[in-house]
Image (cartoon, rainbow, N blue to C red):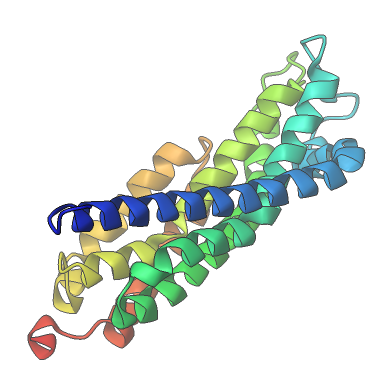
Length: 251
């Protein structure tokens, strides 16, 4: 017969085991979604790569084109893009599974704040990627093709191009998360509205510094990232006013 002292330990082990089983179930569902989307996209992998390459191909000089420097690149690179696209498409389901796992352990006020933040983070990441594809990449490639030295043909390797574009998507997606980051910092008590307003000038300088590091070496791309980051910072300040109550009021 188990002693009363051992019962809490048994309950703790059972609770931990049940959480691990639920976590495995959530991970399997998210993985299954990614695989289903990937299998559906594989037949269109080459078409997807053609769409991804349009911002560069349309601005290459006549007679120039993308090249494959490795034997397996024409096969592997479109598959990599299909996998990245499947992650991109499946992200709402992945985040839902994550939310379904952690939400039972949150308080009501935490759920009230976390739910819109999660949705906003997803939407802003998508908007950042679209901003990079439709506006920044064409401007950057127009500049890079214009400054190519005479006698040099610009022929980019397809794998290097994919890595560059994915890096740009990821960087712009993260940079567009500025409002979410500002709200989280205010929620944990690091900053408040008055502090955010007082450091506005430093935030602007930081936005231009980050843009100068991330973007290709042209002033247009830097401005096209820095200005939205500054505007998104102001959006974050407004969101803090709407969503975060002053700490003394809560107390």
